[in-house]
Image (cartoon, rainbow, N blue to C red):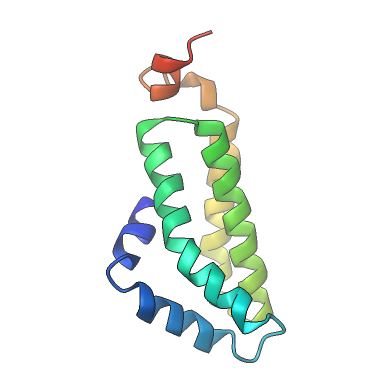
Length: 115
């Protein structure tokens, strides 16, 4: 997630154009696609960064899962079936990590929010 967001920052406009072009024939309004395409890299970067440092881990994992579900929905709308397996793998990893979110003793969550 961190890397996806990071590499899209310098080419935000072209990424948005690519995404809008991909969704031209979908039922989604163009304004929604444009908004999402500009927000997505920041969300991906933020979720990835929080997971790397282990801060607000549960929120980051749930947010990452929600983003991936939206991406799966979008991929389905444009029949981009080849993208869905990797998106599903991300969801499975996020859900799996949610089961063990308290087990990372060196995370920022453990440092700042010890119970």
